[in-house]
Length: 255
Image (cartoon, rainbow, N blue to C red; front, side):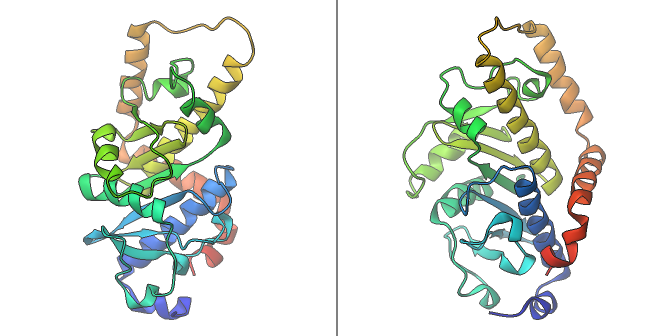
């Protein structure tokens, strides 16, 4: 396996930047406590290589992830570069992420989590409720996928893609959350809001108090407001602010 300094000199500048961005994203997911030991996964499409994407080396904790830990694989789950040989990949991660990257060329980054609140909402028959402003971001633009067991079967990929449709956020029933975006910033913003919406829902529904719901017109209007606000410039500003939280780690994760 090549040392990090040699890897940076071996790959393109675009791939190295993608590796640094993805390593930073793994660490931010850890920062916001959305990890599950060595499980769950995040992927990013390799710039200028539409059939290849980067995913974590299985066994590395998210808070320790480095650019050189990431693995470039194809849609068949094969490691495609000599410099990544010897790095293991989570099979379930490959199944879920390869399905979406292959079917949705507009998707650049995919995040999958197993948080306690995300799993709790995934087990509730009504799914995500329009209880909070955070939840209204996903009003009528959130999909669901029925649980089929641990995602090890390639046959499940087609059903995952069908259920995702043209949305960028999905609740995997009895499992967890999934967020996708056309950039790292977009995907991070989406998983952050989806996770916060689930956290609020579990607290509200467990309180025993009567719940108040906005009317349908307000829900729809708020969802449209979110869509108008989420410009590439705004999402980049959110991402830059989040990355500043781990700026002191940059020399480590970008290595």
